[in-house]
Every structure is written in C-alpha cells, then in structure tokens.
View 1 (cartoon, rainbow, N blue to C red):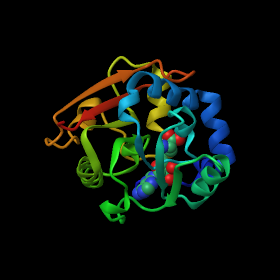
View 2 (cartoon, rainbow, N blue to C red):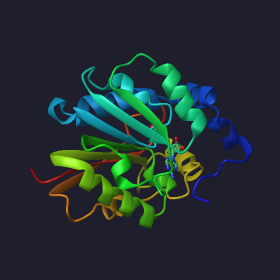
View 3 (cartoon, protein in one colour):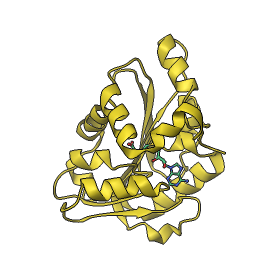
View 4 (cartoon, rainbow, N blue to C red):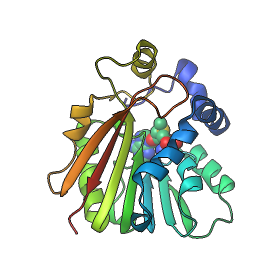
Length: 210
Ligand SMILES: C[S@@+](CC[C@H](N)C(=O)[O-])C[C@H]1O[C@@H](n2cnc3c(N)ncnc32)[C@H](O)[C@@H]1O
C-alpha cells in the first residue's frame, strides 16, 4: 500500500475536506507560486497534470493552456470536472498511472507531477518520468513537487511530513535520482516558504533537449 487511507487520513479522500485543508495550510497558494516561479509562459501551451487531485493548479495556468489532468480518485476527478466546468480546452480522466498506456496522455509542453511522487515507489516513479519524457515536446519541461526530509528543517515540518498519507517521502537527493538521464538537465530546490505552515518541499524542474 503506497498511500494510507485509514483513520484520520481517510477524511482527506473527501474532495471538500481535501480542498478546505489545502486552502487553510497554503497548499493552494503554493500552486500559484509554482506557476509564477517555475512555469514560464512559453512552456505551458499543452499541460499534463499527473495525479491532478481536484485540479487546483488549473486556476493558475494561463487561460490559453490546453489542460489534461488525471487521477486515481474518481471523486477527485468528479470534483475537478464540476469545479472547472466551462473552462475551454480542459479534460479530466480517472486513471491509475501504473496501468495507463503512455499514449493515453497527450503530447505536451509541460508535465506537472505535484504531490504525487511521494505516493509511488521508485519503479513506478522512474517509469512515469520516462513516459513523460517521451510525451514532452523538445524543450518541454517536467516539474515535480513533493514533501521532503532534510537536515535542519523545522521540527513541526518534519513531524507533519513523517505523517503524510504517501509512503515514499524522499530526501531531495532521492527525488533527483529518479530523473531519467535522457533529460538534458534538471535542478532541485528545497523550499521552506511555500505553505503558510512550516513545511519543506522539493521542487525539481527537468528540461528535455530542444
Ligand atoms: C497529495 S495529492 C496531490 C493532488 C494534486 N496534484 C494537488 O497538488 O492538489 C496526491 C494525488 O495523487 C493521486 N495518486 C496517487 N497514486 C496515484 C496513481 N497510482 N495514479 C494516479 N493518481 C494517483 C492521489 O489520488 C491524489 O489525488
């Protein structure tokens, strides 16, 4: 089991609870920051959002973006469809990234994997990132964002992250080690300033050769 869905964490499976929690801790605001600081306009024409949840990030993408989001949770996908009803050029699919044919994802300029790698094991993560490399256009970018454990982080951040639903929280180096060598370059930053609460995120930006 890669994700804990029992006990108190079970209520997070409810889209309304999940969305409220995300807003309160600043996780929604963190998506705005990621879009402002890591998504350049030119790279955002066709966007694939892996494990999109209720598709928070779509609010912060340029209106001209063509968006495809998929997630394991049917209730999250239903909530995403309802929330973004009427937004042109957006589609949502309930699918398991481990079972999905790579070509079920459209060719894209930007792939976002926000808060997902820490829910999946190394083998699945590497396969996903290889598939995304294949789907990206030359010069396209893959952005991953996940909680991370690092020395010197706030104690409360460490304790919260250790209790995450995802069972594969990694160090920044371990997230970096998942990046396929075929990417022309990648950089990982540890950010302690993305949420309203003490929290540490590893943001990795991978660029495909032009
Ligand atoms: C922490 S949530 C992040 C959701 C969204 N990306 C966001 O940032 O709001 C992790 C998401 O990954 C999804 N997920 C986990 N394992 C998955 C899998 N095997 N295939 C597709 N989605 C998966 C979960 O359903 C959940 O919506």
